[in-house]
Amino acid sequence: QSALTQPASVSGSPGQSITISCTATSSDVGDYNYVSWYQQLPGKAPKLMIYDVSNRPSGVSNRFSGSKSGNTASLTISGLQTEDEADYYCSSYASSTLVVFGGGTKLTVL
Amino acid sequence: QVQLQQSGPGLVKPSQTLSLTCAISGDSVSSNSAAWNWIRQSPSGGLEWLGRTYYQSKWYNNYAVSVKSRITVNPDTSKNQFSLQLNSVTPDDTAVYYCARGWAKHGMDVWGQGTTVTVSS
Image 1 (cartoon, each protein chain N blue to C red):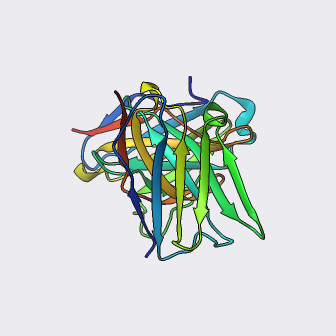
Image 2: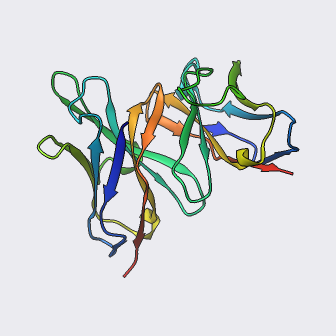
């Protein structure tokens, strides 16, 4: 069982906003200040979308944003587009194993 | 632009050693500001970090507890690449293996293309 819990699936319509949660279930992640989010398109490698909870790498659309409240981190996608349909994974620094991943969330754009 | 190019066999027999290489372009395996990681994705989709190597005045390695007794990640400065060796593989090691640049605290910002490895006789 992963130390990070994500919903298996979320869906939304074009133009809407959706939020994917990532809840830490282990104290191994400490203050949970090092959360990253990845987008994985079918057959492709994951792509870093958010790091350090809320920072966007250069080139990532500002429609993607990250936040945290307590032990739950969130990825919000605003102005949903069909090309956002993908699997999304959260990840966190963990003191014992360095990196832990959530189980992934499949985003469907209806 | 940093790119990672993976190479290695896609089929390994049980009990043998899985060996993959990740060639780096646009950065250096000896960089003081990067760590070089191996991550795998099981057929069910879950991602698992396996290990890393990095240089900060000397070489360091860290490994996941789940594979610590079987894994080696080595840099090759002459070829600007790094490698993964996983010993005594079983069918549970069947996965897509990725190399990636990044720090545990700040995410993996560059990924290789992935190598599908099947463990089967």
